[in-house]
Length: 307
Ligand SMILES: CC(=O)N[C@H](C=O)[C@@H](O)[C@H](O)[C@H](O)CO
Ligand SMILES: CC(=O)C(=O)O
Image 1: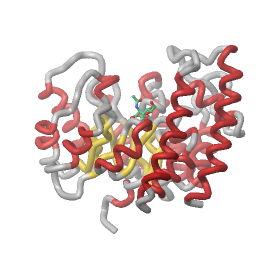
Image 2: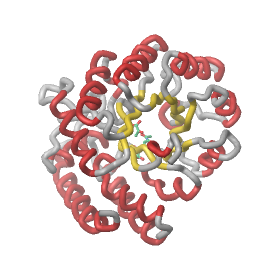
Image 3: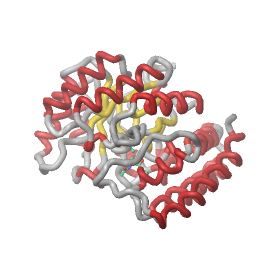
Image 4: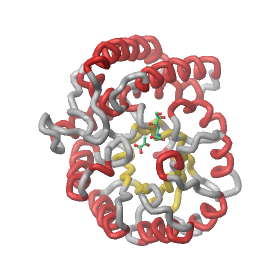
């Protein structure tokens, strides 16, 4: 068992939990966190895209993390995503997360302005310098417009706090770039859920994903198949996962709103996605019923792989 084993596995990106008025719901946060603990995932990634972080205030984000920690802290690995519009707010969130006892911090690059790489490095280093926690660099060029380079990563890892990269770029070969020749005992998390199996084969140690929370059992089954070298089964499960993810995208509503409506059908009501994320439409409702049934069928089929 190495110090980094606690990060190796299936880590759902935790969804924003609101009450029926759209305010942060401590009860629903605790309910959802306990649900994932029971399902048996390795940890939770709190306050990322799936947590709708950019649509929440610093105070709201603190409340979210406090409730996750109260419900499952110490029982699962908790990674707090703390990037916020300013460095000052990001540091405030980082220090708050440290005071709650999370395992690690993660951050996207600075948002909105296209800043030079030196400013991006300084942003990540400022956050790292503000706590003693492990730090995960988040590479998600599709949404941030900045693609992490191995050159910058080699510079960043001079700081021992950097333990890994969450890689959400699309080329699976980027996992090789961030895994190979960076430093010993370095973690890469697969980002795109549609290529969880491909990323793992390329060397990702685990995954953090935005759709895991809708069907964690399928990712646990795929993870089990990979660990047991059953690649035909791993691929079969990945294809089933992808059919489900692509059906999310056939809805007019935003994926997170669609997923929330699916979770509500399983007695996991966490409210709706915040605007400007588009709400699911009436026309989506029938599709959502069918997707929920498809997820249930896939879970019934593949949960026995690991359970
Ligand atoms: C761009 C984006 O949000 N990527 C997420 C994180 O890597 C993924 O987990 C996606 O939510 C998922 O692959 C669905 O497309
Ligand atoms: C999907 C993901 O990793 C996030 O919520 O940031």
